[in-house]
Amino acid sequence: MDLGLIDKTSDLLVNSHHTIVLTGAGISTESGVPDFRSPGGIWERYDPTVFFYSRFLSEPDEVWRCVMDMSRCGDFPLWEAQPNRGHLALAHLEEMGHIKTIITQNIDNLHQKAGSRKVIEFHGNMLFAKCITCGARYEYDHVLKIADISLPPLCDCGGILKPDAVFFGEAIPKEALTESFRSAEDCDLMLVIGTSAQVEPAASLPLIAKGMNTLFRGFMNVPIPKSHCHVVEINREPTPLTGEVSDFIIQGSAGEVLATLEEYVHRKT
Image 1 (cartoon, one colour):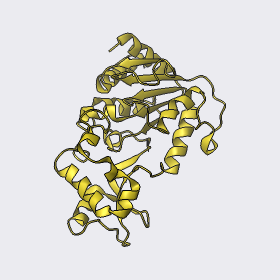
Image 2: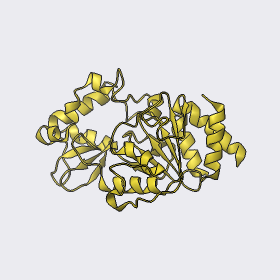
Image 3: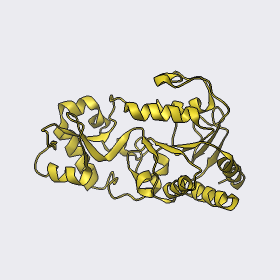
Image 4: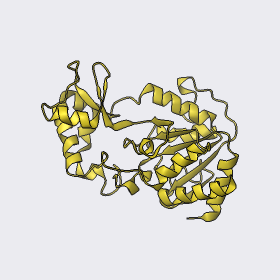
């Protein structure tokens, strides 16, 4: 962990007018939530085709059975997971007025548990289920009670409930997509934390922040002109953004780096 770069980032935060944060799986692994693609991740233990939207529509009972098995055996402990010092540091920085918005690719609700108020869930939230017919939303605990009676769990309207996360082949929610692109366009500092920056369209958000060319610029009526913006990565390993898009990368665990960054900001405000 480079303390010089943390000091530099704290200066950027204190002087920024509009800071946003983009988070990925790396911020939640310290809470015991496994990621999907790394060695030992979820996709090595479960068939990823279970989470194709077309599979859900054809076999919703099997998909729900898999989701419940993952939960009960502890392979995907989203429901019991608690925010770590990285989530808490971001919530405190938001409370201090230094962070406007968190855009998360995670589906674990940990930013909200930590106290962050302005969170855009790019890929939804697995702690809820949503009716594919009427759109009603249910908390997971209530869904489990319904599922004990029948699979797939059904809404009061009779429609099938689906985990409220974006499955493969399913569109990113329009509101989340629009808000995320506009936030990237408006910011003058973006912290990119714990993401490999390889999954689109989220991977284009740092490019939009920097005013660089991307197929997604100008999408959803987001204006193209962009003033100067800093992009800072916090990640264990370099990513495709490193040396190409980001100003610099602070290598280390997200929790340790963010907790230290919060301390530096406190000293300067």
